[in-house]
Length: 119
Image (cartoon, rainbow, N blue to C red):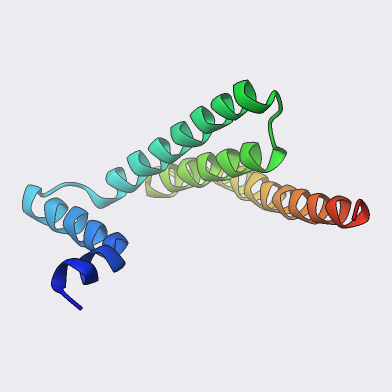
């Protein structure tokens, strides 16, 4: 195998190393970068939901819950890295996150159970 084919095979690791090296060289804050990347992922999820709605005229609950989970993780990271941690807000964010994961589990369970019943 050539080096180019190896790079294609491990493109995710190459991109991660590039971002990490850029952060070290520039001296960027890793936490802020992760928060911004999570925000970008939320925006991508919302745009995908909008395009899916216009194509199929429906939205899957799973996509909405995924975007909410990513946003809750982002907010949790902001709350944890903040100098003055409000324990009430932190507790609520953790409870919201657990409830969103439970909703995600239910959406997968119900979707697959209903598709098995129609076979």
